[in-house]
Amino acid sequence: MKKFFNSLSEGIVIIHEEGDVLFINRAGSVLTGIRSPGNGTAGSRELFKNAGSEFLSLLDNVLAKGKKVSDREILYRRGKKELRISISSLKTAELTAWGPVHVILIRDITEVWRLHCKERALLNQLRKNYLYHIESLREIADSVAHEVRNPISSIGGYAELLIKKCEEGNHNNSELKKYLTYIRDDADKLDRLVTLVENYSDISDVIFTKENAASFFRRLLRDARAEAAGNGITVQAPEIRSPRYMAYIDRGRMETAFRDIFHKSIHLASPDRPLCIDIRFTPYEIQVLVEFNTEKITRDDIHFIFNPFTLTSPREHSFNLAIAQRILILHGGMISMSLHDRGLIRGRISFPREKRLRG
Image (cartoon, rainbow, N blue to C red; front, side, top):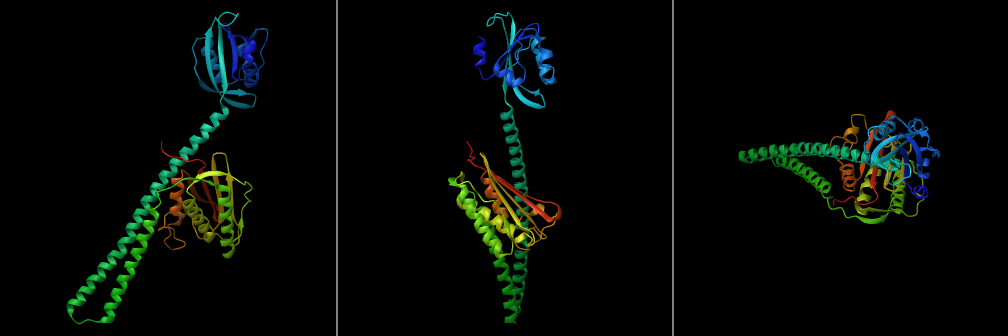
């Protein structure tokens, strides 16, 4: 029986109903840091006195109160380390020669728990990102309404003036031409605005294909360095050494997103400090870090960096970052921009290696 227990990958601890530890298998010794007593006279509370209050409380419930435990997850202290373990217990008199005993099964789930916590944190961050994106959409809708209302009011006012001039009969062609020019300019402004909004909304159809992300980002970095050099900016970026890293992306959409992000960073960056880009490939996701110093964005502006209408510098309508944000979210990713001391902007972008599709 001992040989069988020692062949298991789970920890097995057998405790007599009176509280003496009778046997700990090999996996159990590695996990708990406690060797099998061998003589069956070691008390459980003495052996596990440093294991932590959570483990000792559960042990009391099993031994003194006879409670059955199934896959209970608790913390276990082993020296200076804390492990996350799963415990199940069974009281039996049939499998051993020691009479009635408690058989305790212990599994180390520390790494699984860490991955679970990391995934939960990522999901919470993703949820916050979606809420932030919804708020950005609301702000963009308000801004579009404001931008559209002004030229419409202007066109209506000039049209009224034209009607009055025509009714008077004494036409001044230069004055009429001036009013018509104003109407045409405002109509062109509306047309440009509608085109921008159409381009922003026309990205819902994302088609995932398996692409070599290493070569994809290598080419993007090469183009970013060339553009930065033309603007007097130095780009610092570690070389991508991985020859092959396959990921599911919409190549055209993602290329548009990162070209816009790098382009905006280059034009916001101060020429006296380098633009730093770091691209990391992990087993589960791709992470891109962008850092640069700027004097063009204030602390009040950073909140609106994805809104094409409210960023005060430069004073122009640009949907580039807003579109990049939507593309990354449609890939199941996240993007954030934060302003730190001395005008340092940190951009953090991540998206999963695999597809995140419904169902």
